[in-house]
Amino acid sequence: MLQVAQVLKSNGVEGGLILSFRDFDPEDIQLQEPVFIEFDGLPVPFFFNSFTPRGNRRALVTLTGVRSLADAEELVGKAVFVDGYEEDEEEGILGWTLLDEDGNEAGTIRDFEDIPGNTCLVVETPGGEVLVPFHEDLFLGKDEENRTVRMIIPDGLL
Image (cartoon, rainbow, N blue to C red; front, top):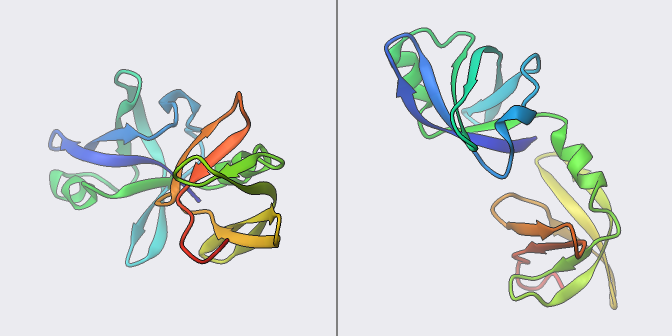
């Protein structure tokens, strides 16, 4: 799953929410597909009842099951995920160069290893193939023009 937004705040008394989108255009959200919010470490699906974009990176939404201010307040600060987008995103960076946080070349992204709860990049380096955790906290960005992905690479992996 890929985090696409975060619940900024509640809106009104009928369960409205303001979402802030991260590197994701609100208009690209598939409104008929569920979004997921984690509770006790498990993703819980929600469907959109309404979705109104507010500028480039925010939207006013209502979700199924969120009917009151108290329900909405319980979601404030939580991350919002979609399923399936990450796979398409991953396939789009195969063959790209992985850079560390300082911009030094680490290797070439050859594949993905889908370990439950810990997707890893398979990176070809001069010393052989290594697995690098592909996690949002380590991801710094990508440059489509130069076909590079920049990440924080934990010490000792390379």
